Image 1 (cartoon, rainbow, N blue to C red):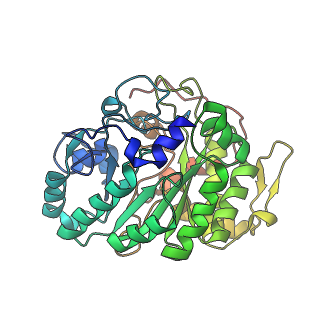
Image 2 (tube, rainbow, N blue to C red):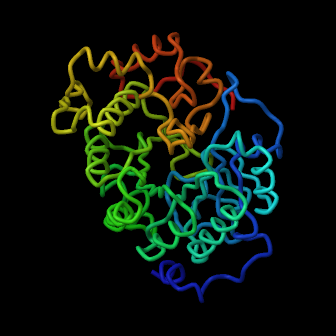
Length: 375
């Protein structure tokens, strides 16, 4: 309770560090490579089209989400903690923006992510305004509903954001409480997150809000597909992630979900978001596994063969194609090389699709890697 009061009252915030946001931000390793801060090349020459920025504070995130690398429950200093299993080095925002403008034709979107910190709402708006002063690249914002209310959403839109993201992550209220809420003394509440999606759609418009959901936190396929349908019915897109444990986090020993489970949820999300099927018309077995997608065999085969369902679900580029493709956010390059790529950052080849076709109908209940993969 004290933690929540501190977050809701900026006057209780810890004294600002000289390298805090809005003057400094963290970049995903992929973004740091793209902007020339770090060396490296992506497997199969994948390209990053969305520059991901993360808010930076010396005292870190106030939340305790069990699966998150930034959690207060995870040991280490905030600035050195990995997130989505990679480093997020920090840089001056002014220099980051300058580097973005030099490759503006190659950048399709910028995404600014909040953390749960009392200064984050106002600093998020400041960061967005600084970016918008120098570039017309589309901007997304990933916000924390615990701290963001309707008025702040309007201010975020006015500052220059066209798509707002809300990371519900967990498919059910029970799992949300276990991984993000009262069970771990976390500040977040299930109802507030879904209320925020509804509020955001009214402000940004249908198709301009995204709901993040993670497959593999203990839910059944039926439960997470029901959440995808709920999101769609509110007017939001769903962006899917496949769970992959962070070292030293409370879920460090929790395994990745089976590939078949993830593939079926990917297809269901694609069908629902493209209004080709609805949850109510899908069929599930006694274990909650999807056994009928609610479309004809020909329609299903077409979706699988075209492969778009297995690409990263993320915010669009200027021309409507995929911008936020997050290469290797859900798997290692070694896994990808072995045909176990969770989210393809580009259109899958015919060879990729032949592998995927076998994975879709695999009803294994545990994930067994083909080999031991290097990081």
